[in-house]
View 1 (cartoon, rainbow, N blue to C red):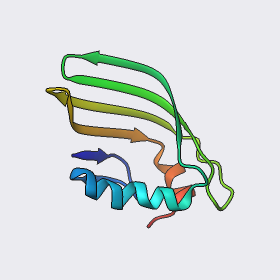
View 2: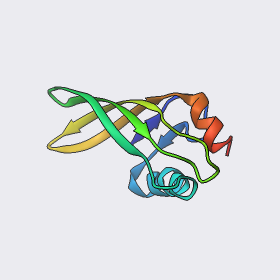
View 3: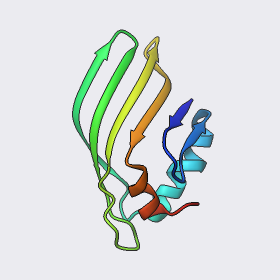
View 4: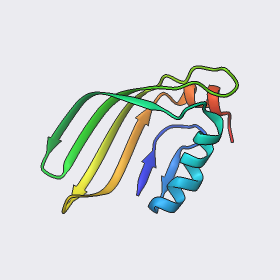
Length: 100
């Protein structure tokens, strides 16, 4: 399960890879020139919890920069990701991707 916090087009819960692909990655891929390049700033792990802080770099096909800051919280069990919670700049998402 992937949870995206905020009040933007992609906010909500995606259950499973198929929902994540169709509801998020396909739309993003259609609207950005080359996807998002994520530069990892830090990774902190404690047992089954991993926090990743990063900076994304992208450009929309309409010419807008999409350089967002991310904080991703992963729950890991038996070496597999069980849940992801993502925090980002909601206003930037709306500016680049619209309301949906």
